[in-house]
Image 1 (cartoon, rainbow, N blue to C red):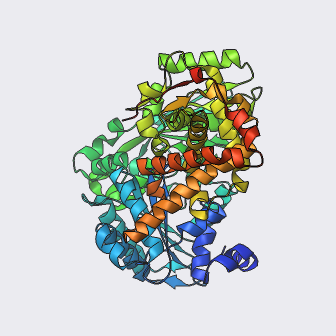
Image 2 (cartoon, rainbow, N blue to C red):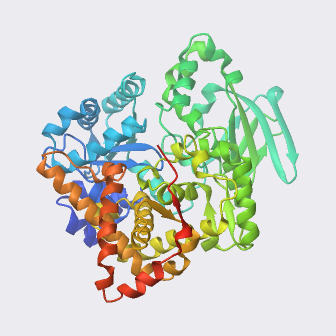
Length: 578
């Protein structure tokens, strides 16, 4: 792994041209190759340098509602002492006092901390990751456990601490590249009196009750290989559910009742053979698809699990012999539905949502309306006409509510704003029109004149572009306080490649204006935070009015004006999102 990393950062012009030293290049390699950040976003994430305060990179992931703080130690094969861990602990302590940290840190980190502040206000979880190509000493491993417990158990600022060493890097890289990992084989010892072995369809099915301490013998927990087919990896012990699990394990009396409080573990395998005495299960290709959080938590409390008080603690273990990968994937998705039920999940069968789906698919038989997380478009439906309810909510907020600044927050969209956004009888032609514009934004993204900080935030910037399109059309038709019906913009959408650069100018110029104002006021400016404010909307609206007034003088201006002219009856007041 070390040789691979060295070779890739040495041969890749991106790493050599954009980062000053191998330490930065190593962290950038991790961001690009494993976290799959695009080149612009990865460069924006790096905060390493003078006055970095032991924080080498920061990612604020709005989709996962997560802040990742990275500390990297790129060394030749060798041992690593506790010093990097102390640096992570120092970063954790400093993050609890953001104003003080911002006074002394470098400019890149100052900007990131503004985004972190907003994320913490929105209750994002925080994970610290220590990247290293070395091996931690025994003393450092002991400190890792101590520091991890300290971060996770803090009432004021709980966070996860994860070691990403060479073994974990290899596993995560294979996952990122969608490669098959080496098969995990394991022999499980079970009590025949507490084991059911049967066959359901073509799948051999085994249900057994395991001592909790036997879970510690399962391979692939520390590096994540055991969970490679799980729809989500460990969320860290500071996750609310995981903290409750750990509290049960640590409780003197309740640990014996663990079986009754827990749904159990679901695992798949390629094959399993049962010994004649039904005591040994020889498993090939083992993978846990439900129970990642639980096993990670059990492992983090290993000493307690091995203690005499926990000798009677048990857990239900389901094992399915499923060589069919497609069926295994479906099992993984469906058995994870009990964790982190989101507002969107609760709305998936709402009568308004079902009605919108029915109307859309009736008008567009080759289209598809996805209402549930994890739902997959049928192969006979057009990808360009497939709309996800979550994406539709973001488009409706940006267009009809004129608040792209809120589009990033899926939780709010399906909670407090749900009845505003999802309306009975909403025109499926308008859904299709919004989707057409969003697809056009994706297609032209690379050619749009946006600076790097905007390019790095595509997941929410594209909804500002969608809003800017609606604002320009409203200004062209001299209806600045109203919103055009998306279905009335079909003619304009035919010239999306000419209109979207104008929308990009709205966002870019508004950003530059806000940046200048912040500099004049000697304030820290965070583009990511600015995009979440009404000030961004106001700035973009102002530029849209200027562009509309100047269009007639553009070489293709008259053509664009004609394309964007729509009947007055196609305008309506914006939907309130306040």
